Length: 108
Image 1 (spheres, rainbow, N blue to C red):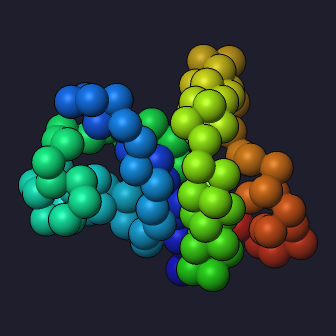
Image 2 (cartoon, rainbow, N blue to C red; image 1 turned 90 degrees about the horizontal axis):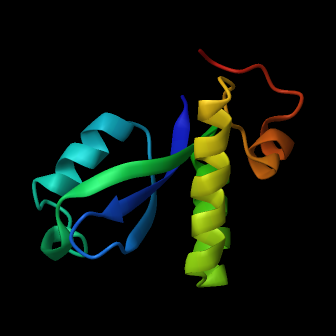
């Protein structure tokens, strides 16, 4: 089953939230409905970045890597790189995602 690392950005104050899930659409909806404690007061949220992984452990590891950096600048750079890739008409896949999924068939 596919798992995602995702980053949300608050329209209210511009803060980021980093998490992981199996269902991006459902998770974003839950955040925007106020069903997640931390994000409830900063609604609405927009999905600004995600990476796809083949297992939960890899998605969780990547989430922790990003959170350990405690760097808004680092997250800004991930979002910029992702947006640039989409504008150029190609799918963005982070180096970390490629490394973890290398040699394993993609589901999709």
